[in-house]
Amino acid sequence: MAEFIVMPKLGLTMTEGTISNWRKAEGEHIEQGDILFDVETDKLSNEIEAKVSGVLRKILVQEGEIEVFRPVAIIGSQDEDISALLSGEGGNVQGGTDEEVLPEATEPADTPVISDEAGKADGRIIASPLAKKTAGHLAVDLALVQGTGPGGRIIEADVQQAAATKGDKKTKASPTAVKTAAALGVDISGIQKDGRIMKTDVQSYYANAHPAEAANGTADEARRVPMNAMRKVIARRMLESQRVSPTVTYNMKVDTTNLALLREQLKDTYKVTYTDLLVKISAKVLIEYPLLNCSIENDELVLKNYVNIGVAVGLDEGLVVPVVKHADRKGLREMSEEVQELVAKARNNGLAPSDMSGGTFTITNLGMYGMESFTPIINQPEVAILGVNAIIETPVAENGQVTVKPLMNLSLTADHRAVDGAVAAGFMQKLKKYIEKPALLLL
Image 1 (cartoon, rainbow, N blue to C red):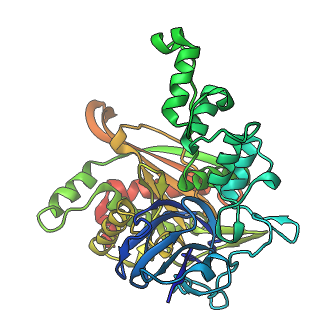
Image 2 (cartoon, rainbow, N blue to C red):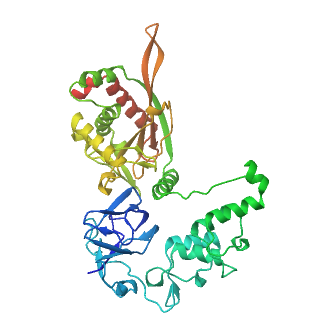
Image 3 (tube, helix red, strand yellow):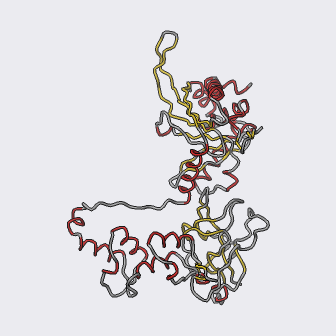
């Protein structure tokens, strides 16, 4: 029996996701477990699997933001009649029972709307969020747009087509042509062509109208590239952090001679990184300095008797922070293995929402890029973050002699609402003590 594939709810706080890529095409046979499409959420990118086998009969949402549980496609048998689903009369739902979905939300929150006039129901205009955004950019009146989505819903392609035909009902242009025309300032209605106007037609029209600029490449150009879901979340959270937290950054140089020696002694048994060692040391010191491991709720400090350390991982798409739970209770090897597993999952889009929640403190390492100092931004609702910089061979005066030592600068950003300067300085001094004498970890 044909059924809807819906936008799954991948976390308790997820309200919408962005379809960034369809892995399957309409008419293609799908086996249970095949990857159907990619979804970008507030925190990460997810691969969505088919729950049943069948044929992908219809893709209802090509790309863009969509609310959880809304239908995005229809799956069924090859010759099955799917007109009832397309008209919004109902059907089964595939993908609406994800294990992380709240119990009371196991049915689609909003099925396709049935209306007598395409794109409108009960006087309301039914349009996707991306369609509304595109309409605003292209100055298109949604009331005049014919919707082709499920139940007459207006989708982005409808808006782009309306923009292309605005003022000239005979003009037909591809969505890419519309975008190219907007970027070059070309009025598509001035392009004479039998049939649909394509991107190359717009480029040729522009080249003919501006021969010198096209030949010499002297035209000023500026591209607008939409932020992906991850980048938008990063931007929103960083702005929120700066707005909420009055921060101070504390820098301290530490000698890594003995830390390097410890790594060398362990390498034949198990290879650990500087990040592994700093996570282990930080977890121990945070128990002694609970104000750096707390959060703030209204006028209360929420002090934890556990340490969950986030380890920032840079990806091409942005930054993710998987969390090592109960780092203070784990041995170095166990903790190191968990860090490696989380980093691998991050780079393969395999992180689950639970892998990125519950952090109480974050470590971010830019040492591999040669950074000597920076000001990390706190990962809310935490109150502190430790920045790790490059290890640099540095001349040091010691006992009247000049010697060269490997020094690393640590940059701690702390929320002054919870952490005063003396507390932050004490925390850094204790970190320095353990880093320079790692044998103290055995006590």
